[in-house]
Image 1 (cartoon, rainbow, N blue to C red):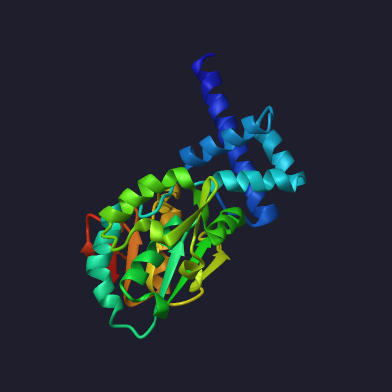
Image 2: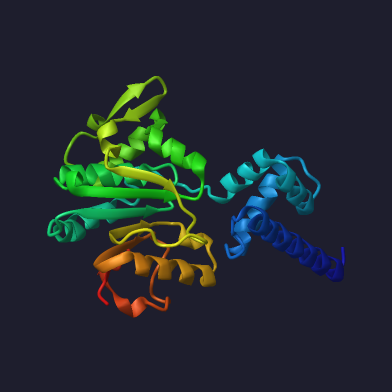
Length: 280
């Protein structure tokens, strides 16, 4: 294949991807047009091969006429890697630096944006329970994918993950035995229902949906890395509008507010653990 053919194939592939993403937006309202190109490209090709289709155009045709294929593609786009107390130092700093601020409020509202299967939500519920703040807290856990929300709400997780989760919990400053929070059922564990009694699980699209409350804390960790610069800016504006004054924003370890338009409206609580406070 000569260089002209290679360039032509790349251009055709890009056109097919653009048509697929525009089709999803126009037909279904799912807007992935500003996701990071290389990431979305990999996930599209994964679904093309999984469906045994000859091309991306073939995938577009199938998702427009087969709702089950559409849901499988949406699930591919929203896959995230998560675990209980992921990045334990983040939760340790949250306990040390943010909890004292939250103690000053008569009630607390926390938004976990892009919560996936809910491990981070349960982690926060445990932390707040140990600090005596859970009873006055309402946690909103949202994701674009309704299937992962069902998993999160059920509170059932593979038992083989508990060893790693326990280590994370200890390193995050956990005060109890981690096993106190769940019971074993065959090959899975079921976390106690009191951990979600103050949690609202709801579908929310960061790309197209608006703010729905004012929050004291917003956590969106390892989601923005899948967005391009334009979309990151849009989501950051959503978070800024949704945070009350002195509200706390928590990001993932590969994410930052340094280059966003509203960067000057925050001060760092912990630069290394990506915790920021809204100051104006």
